[in-house]
Structures are given as C-alpha cells and as structure tokens.
Image (cartoon, rainbow, N blue to C red; front, side, top):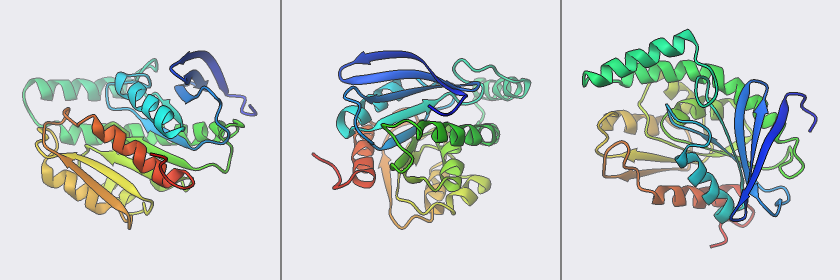
Length: 256
C-alpha cells in the first residue's frame, strides 16, 4: 500500500467473508471482502446512521450480503464523533440539543439536518482520501466501479460525497429530510439511484422525503416506499440494494 496513512489493524474470517479493520490517519474503518480475494471486484462504500458505527449490526449485515451475494468489496468508515472517534464540543452541544428535543417529544428534523450537514463537511474529505487509499489495493484497483450505500445520516453524508466524486457510479439513499443545501447536491447527481422511504415515518414528513427523491437529476431512479415507522424499513430492501449494485457495478448484471 502506497499511502503512508492507511494501515490494516486486524483481520477475521467467517462464512467466506474476510473483514479487515483499518485506520486512515485518525479515521477508523472496516473492509469486508470475499475470502477468495476476488480479482478487481467492485467496491461499495457504506455510510452508517447517526449514533451508530462502522461495525453496527446494520453495517455488518449489509456488508455480508453484498460480499456473499454480489462478490463486492465493502468499506465503512466511522463518521466524525462516532465509533471510536472523539466528539468535539460542537458534537456534544448538538447531540444534547437533539436528545432534549426528543425527550420533550418535539420535532428533531431541523437539528438533525443541521448537525448532519456539519458532519458531512468533515466526512466527505475523509471518504475521498479513504477511497484513494482503497483503490491502491490490487484486489480493488483504481479503475474498478464504485457504489455508495447509506441511509439516514449515511444519506446526509453520501449525497454530497456522490455529487463531488465521479468515481461513484450508482448509489442507494433514503430515510432523510429535504433540505435546500442537500437538494442542491442531489441536483448534481445523475448516476442511477435507489431511494428508500417509510410511508409512516414519525420523524420525516412524507412530503419532505418525497421532495428529496424528486431533487435527484438521475434519469434512472427508483423510489422504494414501504409502510411502517422510521426504524421499520423491511430487511428485504437490503437484498434489493444488492441486486441494484449487481445491475450497475458488474459486467452482465446480477447472476441470480
């Protein structure tokens, strides 16, 4: 590896999937790959939700699906102030404000959107540097296809990242509010996208989620709407994401 700041720190193998923990400077991350060391397999970058981390159950489960059923490499990095990364005083203030509003039963959308936009400003450069380092790995390569998969805060970070990074050629987003700044980034995205929305989301008003989907300039975009509350996104949507990336990141599309 040419990058002086990228280091693998641990390795585990289970059910045909090898997981590497890594650091990229001060950023902590994880990379899941086929144990066979697939030659130049596509790379999917994943963003975790707010309050979670790179190896939360949702991230681990989706990564294992993408590797086992799509043959992909999957990378997740901890967002600023998440996982093992220290919080700043700004992080602590915003989190306290959010928790106070939730305890009082007040809407949190404005707080979440504001704080996640701040995190995105810090996280996007970290993702760009991590992608540079990952593409130096021989099993990934600099010319391989790259996708992005992130819901909730993963969308707040992933939309500006995808708008700024031409190497990302397909993305799965969802479960986030419309905000004019985020929509401005969405209007610069033309790659295929899949977007998840919960019809009965108690936090994100239905018109807000629909407006964010509408903002994407992609000619190919699919809206996946399911009944249920914010945290009730059906697990089969992860299977749909695997098929979506298989269509757009692999030669010949899905094998199944």
